[in-house]
Length: 274
Image (tube, rainbow, N blue to C red; front, side):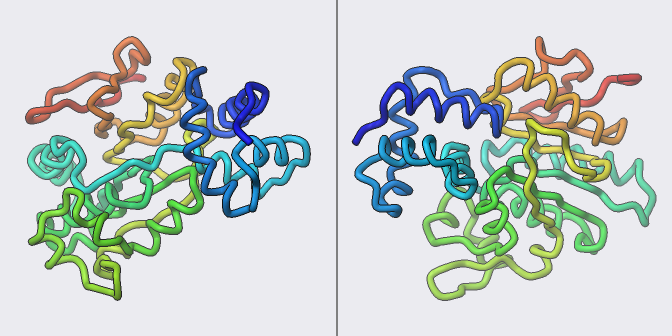
């Protein structure tokens, strides 16, 4: 049973209500592909039957699974490169110069997926900064409970470690555990993972020196982008740094940010008084 127009519209409204993600008409194929495994697992004849079942007989657990299935969890190690080169080459030295020896450097990996971004940061800072485990605190958040649990576990398949992770870092920071690779305990302790819906009021996460909010804003409409950027700015130190995805910008969205060139890429900083 394929997805009907009514079923797609229900899914579209559900996902927007729960996560603010916009599913445009024409994305029916995406909904079919993402929900098919769930439909098969539950013994439904197809995605249409699954959606109609949850639509007519609301089930919070199944509703959550539908929303999580339709959030994008694409990620890799050192994704796009430049934001990580900028962290160690420019941002870290400036932060160390501005902070006291006992001040912790706080970094937020928003929409962390299964943790590759957060652990990329942990590996880089562990290699670049003495006593990084006590100097750096990395907060990793995602709307998906499953992704948060995976980040906490710090275990990755061979296929996952093959996506952008240098062999030297794999040897230095991971140990083999059966068919998986497990990140070193010291690095896992640097990362705290929790659930967070960026499109809703944010929990008290503290103030951050650096925020990675990459490849996230592209999924939202303009008012939601503006609201997210406002919330993020409220959780940043005045001299903090924001990294967005290569196809994302604050320009024309929120004028309270200043774009600065960092290495071969760019970052955004809160404007004074914003």
